Length: 243
Ligand code: NAI
Image 1 (tube, rainbow, N blue to C red):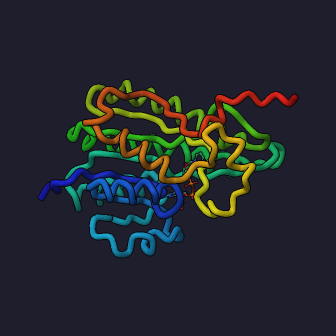
Image 2: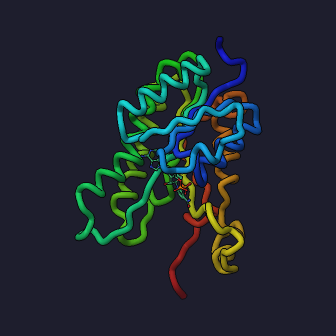
């Protein structure tokens, strides 16, 4: 039987931002499916949640993504929201970056969003649902030795607006670009870590979760599609020339 509550699929939801997104959506009345790697701690993280379908899988893998979508529809018979969040970073001087590492980053951060969007198009259209991709402010600015990550996130920005146009008017597709979101030891941050942000603090996973849940909710954000939302405490608006 088709579930009465809306259903969202979140990738990389066992940890960090994805876990906060999944937990926040649950608290807003969504049912959740999560895809994450077998060694990610996914089952432990959501062991006692009734409204969660935990799927061990690799978002780089076409078959794995297709199987995950099938499992979601088997269980809930609907899909209203898709959050393509799973991501990895390799920081290495370009001369030492292997082609295998380049592909691993591009496949995880960019190709997976294509695989997910393609597999989820039909149920999302039926639900007049929404997709959110998680990029990064590194799509538009860089530190040294981050080529594969920046390229993948830049691609994700472009993929997002392309999908928004192809899927219109049935599915809204938006991108969230976080800056520094501390997913581990927030209380261990230094004063200067916070102070350098125009907003006065480093970001928390919950900051991103609130924005994602707004973007998935068509009643609140129904006029928003193809957009990129920077959530970085103002860092990309700050001039950094030294005096
Ligand atoms: P995290 O490392 O805490 O969590 C990422 C999750 O994705 C993990 O549970 C991991 O197992 C999963 N994952 C990785 N590869 C996977 C694969 N092939 N298949 C399935 N699951 C996979 O990372 P965090 O910090 O929560 O980042 C989440 C997203 O936000 C990423 O896309 C990241 O690039 C982006 N982001 C994070 C920022 C931050 O400051 N934390 C800043 C900007 C963007």
